[in-house]
Length: 291
Image (cartoon, rainbow, N blue to C red):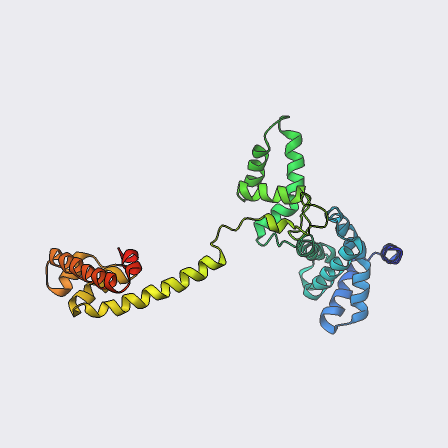
């Protein structure tokens, strides 16, 4: 910890000691780096703007990440700005670099603030970095005792997200996250019970899944064997009506077979009756499932 503090003090001291650059000198250094890849010029350009990096990093210190890491990430953004800067546009390098430094800091915070990924879209990112400020401002301007949902509604309109997104982000920023593998406070000491143990799985039990799969395969085999008793036309109608994902209508089948839809219904009923009789004779359980 002492070593980290010393490094931080060294960065601050070096940044404050670096001389400011006049506009013409800054432009000349940027040209030397862009055209000749002069690393000495890049070093001077970066060193002169470390104050800017530190100032922007300080604005994000309340997210709980080490200041030294924020400064380091801001420096990465500064170097990215230097690699993309176009001196011919006659824009001050600090103005251009501010956007890249802030973007690098925000990306680092989103990746490291929590193990749960957040801010994956531009609107979610804007919500993450503006929620506290907007909530504080609205709490001062709106009447005392106003419902939190009203504040969430105003923030949702301002940022362009849903109220549910605002409520979820507010909950994440207002309380610490807890691991599902952490011991449960309600369990006895030494029992090894974790929070995950209290989550309810609404799906079927493993033995039920396996049993259903085995029974399903068995019924399919029985049904395929029973289909042999049907005539070609009965089999075609039954497959089109009952064994396809999208069953054909009586009318469409009648048009294809050249018979009336009532005749199709009669043939289908006769085919089902044949199947039931065969399955009852061979496997009573399958007959019940088919009914």
